[in-house]
Length: 327
Image (cartoon, rainbow, N blue to C red; front, top):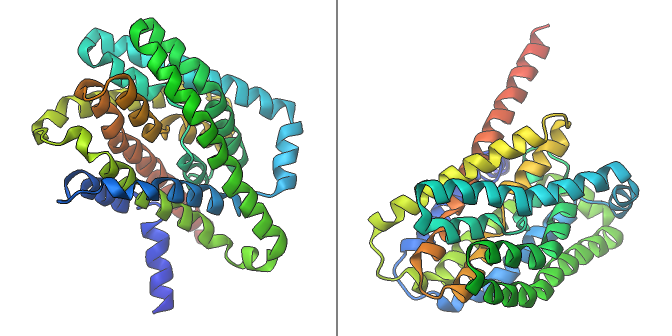
């Protein structure tokens, strides 16, 4: 029974994590009831993601990364691509095909990397330390870049966006530092326990990410109360196009990197902090579906991209294992 549970969790919280993620999103969107009171779960499960991810990162590993000039240069140009180049490319395409949706689509693509992206990078076999650095640096830079981009397309909304980003900067910093510090304290006090559970920590982080999808969606349900389900089709198509363009830019820009760095870049660029995007959209454009919907529905294509890449990686590993055993 224990072996079955382990195998089941490996699949459901591994390459098939998209299944609980989509179930959580569907429940958050459509489960009857008033869930505004569950907003307390958002910081709790955000912290859980980084705590469990942090259990697999050593301080000396992080220190070595901070002394590595090549790694720091990667963080610099990857952050610039994530926060400036990708939103501008997506914005130009959206303006050409659906200009009324430009503010919402461009806004969510301008968000920094989400905390979940560290666990996602680990799932894809990526460099989790690089992912953590990208989350940290992009979160610190976003209060400057997001209002700048807003000023380009909506000068009147730039001030509101800046207020939300600055107000959230302290929250994001606390959510980065506190769970990571607790994880390192755990590593220092019970190292044997951490070592024995190494195979479970990323699964726990993925589980927190899936639960977070429900909490963050259900808590904001009043923003789309009364909307027809068919109204979700067009913004969903636009978020799919935006995600595809994000993947294309990342793939092109990281072509010479090893897979570990490429996967970290892809995870942090695609798995953006769309929860922060919802908060900024609600403040700058209260009740405006054209701005709120892209931030909400972006969860659909970003989960799909990670699921597809994870499945391909798993199949490649299985084929390699079979070829090795046939020799």
